[in-house]
Amino acid sequence: MRNPIIDIGAKELSYEIREIVEIAKKVKNYGKEIIWENIGDPIAKGEKIPDWIKEIIISEVKDDSSYGYSPTKGLEETREFLANEVNKRGKAQINKEDIIFFNGLGDAIAKIYGLLRREIRVINPSPSYSTHSSAEAAHAGAPPLTYYLNPHDCWYPDMDDLYKRIKYNPAVSGILIINPDNPTGAVYPKKILDEIVDIANEFDLFIISDEIYCNIIYNNKKQVLLSDVIDDVPGIALKGISKELPWPGARCGWIEVYNSDKDEEFKRYIDSIYRAKLIEVCSTTLPQKVIPKIFGDRRYKNYLKERNKLYEKRSNLAYNLLKNIDGVIVNKANGAFYMSVVFDNTYLNGANEIKINNKNLKEFVDSLKPNTHDKKFVYQLLAETGICVVPLTSFCTELNGFRITLLESDEKKFKYIFDTIAEKIKEFLE
Image (tube, rainbow, N blue to C red; front, top):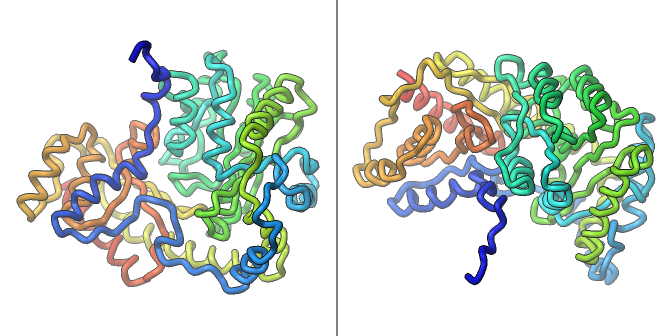
């Protein structure tokens, strides 16, 4: 090319949740059946959408207006409905103008980070969901800045670590929270969220809270939203329907903006996000139209309750099958539908291995030359058993381990997956 055309941040873009698929496809070519535990798609794992939800969608499909443009921020009646839902809680108060729709939260995340000044940083949790950490790092043209989630303390943030990393890095202007958390399944208590708000207030920061899983909470944990604790701190909550209905193919998410009137710089920043969306015209209309009818239906809360019972059952079964294995740190997932398992470093050495009986598959895996212990485990697990999980080091952390979903709807198969993984962990760490 006449000139270098690739932005310095492009090298930070990574999404191994899907990148592992390319390796799995090659393993499949050797005749191995793949069990996909890498991605959070409930539909792909057999979850069924209730007929009453489908009927609402069908009725809107028959309405010609669902084929037209929506306003740039989103349908007014839907934004009004969602603002009222926030206001019912009695904490933060917003109106429809504080809500902007996007074509999935990936679209929102790209704009949220991409419209910051390059030298401004948003500190991410570690482990962190790859879409956030990659987008933030790509915007900055530098590796992500992170704070530590402690696997020895329910995956809660290390508040001392967060405080010091903000105090001694003046470029940090925002804090990312993912609650319930992906990849760990942690659900944060109010005390922790209050402390994060206090830190943001002290250092004059804004908060981003990814709450896409906010209605997927179980094991008697309580839902605490950013709107419940935000006080006067500027903030953005990210929400959507991809995991909740679930309807990931709808690509429908939105942001709720809190306290934009409290800070002129933050207000201009939010306006830039809106103007970036204005250039795109709008987000998809159909899923926006059905949200008030589905969320407002008397059957919806019970539907969520029944779904959460299933995730709770799977969470407890998975935890009980893995918790007593020597050399791993396991926390019970309490929200979302993921579990992260950490390997104790004292058990890791160059000799860790799962035996691969297929000679050709062994040669293929050896040729991949994994550069972390957990990638070696994941590749060998995939080659020997067909179970596809994601290395934990792919989630912006130095902790070796893996993330697995709790989505398998066939109970017998679910138990087989975790029994097999337990067996292979023991083999790998012996």
